[in-house]
Image (cartoon, rainbow, N blue to C red):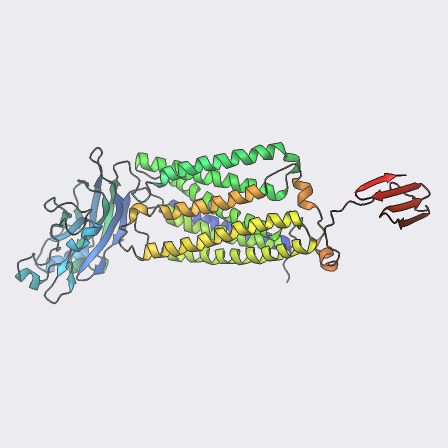
Length: 538
């Protein structure tokens, strides 16, 4: 059975609604706060120990303001089976250790056993050498030579706290303690235990830790983005003021493409402003507003989809060489909807929920669909742009051709910058395994914002509303079918025409050219002469 267009649109709306429900549900379930919250996380086996990553953040320290990592109701709960195993093994106490260390001093946690292998927990051979206690976590005081950003030796780093399971007790709780950070650096928190009785998911974490910088609660990687989005809000406001002033002045001549550009400007302004207020509230309260973050991420996804569709419409010649897209509009809408869904999942998954300066590996799963759809957009944009340029050349539309050449140059520069920045981003992240360059990581999302803003400015400059917008947009246009059948005649001729006035179909007429290059038209109604560009009745 064939599917009608209305049925296809309804099915597309149903799919979009389903995606929206999933995304919103994910946001509600994942959005907790800016703190690192633990709710049933399990330890993973690392070497001869078991580790739970408690968070990593760049922390700015200042003598005039306090920076810290605060433990609030952090506890671990083991299963009765694990407690029984510990009792059978001598009714011993089991300890969970929390270690906070700076990235440059990561080698201060753990040691090397007799065989030269890395060990988190002290082995019998290491204990015999007197360097540690068997079954305990191995660590040593950080040396100032290990990292220039590390605290000096003797300052008590790495910081170590412990919580114990007494015999028969199922819960081990850490004290609600605040660990002051006096040196700027990338700090990590690891919970470690060395007891096999707690292996295989026999213990789970609960509670939270709060990380504060000297300037506020924003993670160090995100802190510079607050003034950046403030500046971008002002830039979009300036662009919007300039655009809307011309829009209001020439509103009778505005074309549909310019309406689409207006929507793109509005969406961009909403996005950057929402991000600014989201980061400002986050920085002030220490609790990330889940609703604001969700709408900021959603507006970013919508703006990204609308921007790509706008560039595609321009490349297709919509409103310049063709007044309507016809059947192509459904494919454009479908591609835009697919990108919106993929970008929404990526933005919400990356920004809504627990914040850490270490990006999870699963982020790659969300990036791949966006990357594939971006490739489809780029291919379609350039193939459409090539056809539009060819059509403009064939029709000798010199003014439009010049405009599209400028747009092509802008687009080529944008794509070149994007490819170069992607290469840099991949290199930056692949060579910074421990996020030691966290202080400049904010530049990566900032440059993407600047690239998209620059391309939007180029489009607004080339397609700004004017008193001739509609006449210029549709001058010399004809339908797709006419263009296919009359390629040879599809030429825009701007030369002035002889307008002899109202002629009767029954008038007798004659036309000839004189020796001095005058065109003479004789009719029953009168005689008309044209010399050069001047036409007059004789």
